[in-house]
Amino acid sequence: MQDARTATTARPFGITADTSGAPAASIGVGQLFQAESADEVPADFGALDFVASDIGAGTEDTFLDVFLRVAGAALLSIYRFQTTGTSRGIFTHANTADRTYTLPNVGGGVLISTATAEFLQHLRTGATIGAYGAGATFDAQAWTAVTFAVAFSATPTVVCTLLSTNSVTAGTAMSAVSSTAFTPHSIGVAAGNPANEEIHWHAIGAV
Image (tube, rainbow, N blue to C red; front, side, top):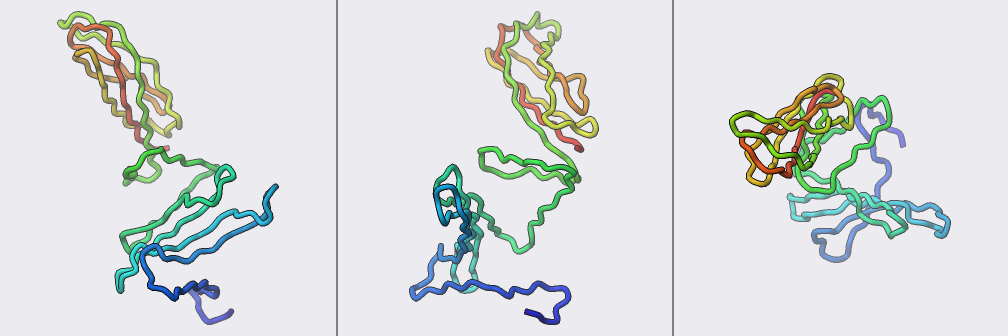
């Protein structure tokens, strides 16, 4: 097709799938993509489904499901994109090499930094330490240095939280903080038995 547009997007191809029944939530339209595998001709490789979660007059909501195959199983809905707002969510990057972004197997929100090119790293480290000394003085236990999974371009901000057992009163500190590593410490303010302790740390900074 050809028209006179200069700064808009044309949609010369459309897929329509009406129903002779009464539409309800979960009605949708999609497209299947097939090729050939070692034992299937044709083989389902993927699909895109646009589905309605609300079909009310003037309140229509839709989402996009991306179907992929995993370990030979039938197509599965692996990714879903939907919104409750009317503005765009724009994904962009300035990578100079291929990078993989792995989402943890938990639900919840995503931390967004207002500064560009900031990166957050988190880990928890557990250890059984020796007994703290007399309560009259601070007694520090040095932990093994922590190396960041991804090096920062400058010294990051590091926050540590200590979880301690056996009723030992203790806090945490750190030393030798650099763009690549730091050393956590647990500090007891009272004598106590050896304690199972766990340090949770967060580091955020430019990469």
